[in-house]
Length: 396
Image (cartoon, rainbow, N blue to C red; front, side):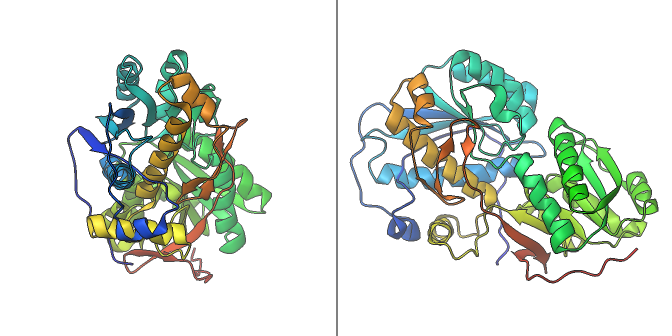
């Protein structure tokens, strides 16, 4: 897989576009569609997410997925002949900013549905505002198990950590045969919750967690933490991290004498993890709901269209964003311009075309997508590759 080159954006985007369902594979492969007249007042959705700050790369990848989906939708006639547009407000993945953005969106009657924020803490801080105002908050990367418990206007197509962390434990313990694990986790609500679920799942699979160390999101120097990890004598290390902090930890492992296999949660799956980690992230294992080399036609159609538009490989966060727009398109088609009707559309729409899921259908009780796909990956020669089943030697 060629290594993507990603641009950095530090501005607000107010992008016009429109869309088509993923099912038209010919159009996806070429990135083109038959021109159709789009008239009338635009239909708007709002996006709260990071365009600046430590998580800016996620927002940049989101925007590429949004724009590709909307190019296709608009070219195919929009939503019932009306153009679909979006406003992207920069939250910096900061709960204080996401709250301010939520207040702005709920007060703007043209915003029919909101997508984001990136992290569960940033999204959950704003959820009460969306719930009280009756505007759907669609947290398409929000995996905290409690996110959709915020109310009947809170929906997600992200796998919950209640499902994700047992998958990570399966990879570490069952597949890689690691039995003494050290866990490093972000000391946030998301990180602590994920850690607790992982520890329970690892123990159920016969492993022992010999160390569990939390760290702050802006932490840079992990040496003292890693010395404590080394003294616990693990045979494997688990990272519950994002790409920047995960890469920083990986770069500091060998200097303190830690050469054990590393398993990371899927949130590190970004080209920036490779860029920031360099050679230090070679050998890191992770899981993803999307991988460009998957042979499924939904994936290959999306990848071909993305390459045509951007001359680079997509990552999972571009795919998540692309899928989120397809969901927004479908529920707006079903619900029209009434915010409550859009909420009511979620349990009614079935088999929404999806890169991640193939077809997406929402469970009305959990307000999440039913059915999850995962692929196991390992970093080889500076690129994410499909894991071939080989078990790395554990060194203590």
